[in-house]
Image (tube, rainbow, N blue to C red; front, side):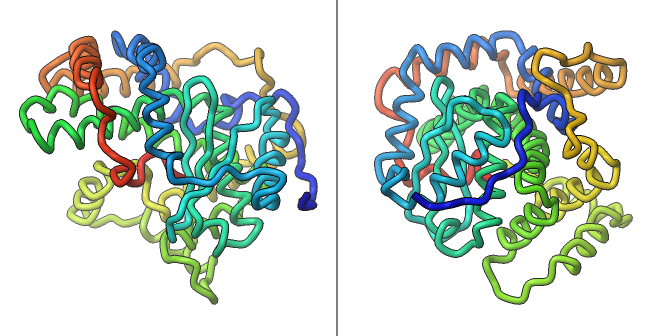
Length: 338
């Protein structure tokens, strides 16, 4: 078995203690949409998760003690650091991109692409696995599984019946925006587990530009600062439309968010052991409530403007998925990844 250096452990840490405010508010608002929690529950009852597993894992290799033990040891280390009792199974799939994703409403599964394991350093691989473990701790996985299934259905239905898929697009875009918010929380989890916030920043830089030698992290951080400080209205407007259809914020924005969070002092406070424990989550304050109301109005508006409520969307989802699986393994795309 591979020997991996021990990581700092955060016993009983609550994800609410380091969650990005946008993620907390967006997640709560998304759950408040009438019928969404029922949709998540029904996805499991309809065995839709099993179909999704077949799509993603049918051409993947299960890692463990006797299969790429270095990566499996890191997976266990990340679970231990965040005090996640049930370590998600870890699979590798052939793809040169350095990325990963986690899904599963009952049993979480992490899938890493071969380019990540083969071309990135141990610290960078650990940062990505810690990011995925952050999704598990923050209870993002059920919503992400729903998002993956909705995403596959959108592709399938819009390809053959463009008008029939319109009601589903509202839910799809609401889930897209939630996904971008959730990534910011998991980036913080990665920084905590690897005990160095510059490691996830470097990993994001390499994901943006590829595993190229002599990349300069300081220069990329300056780039992130300049990107965030752009004051040209046309440029910012163009950026908004470029990001709105993505599952993840742009890497430069994510790096800037990590740096800002560390500068606030929260990172060092949590590292010193002063963090929120599970079961001690405080009641919502007015600042959170205001953000929650913002996302709730936004998500409800997105769904309603598409022409239906979530309950109608669920009815269509159940009828569309009553037959064959939604798409094929070649349609997995980049949703839900690090």
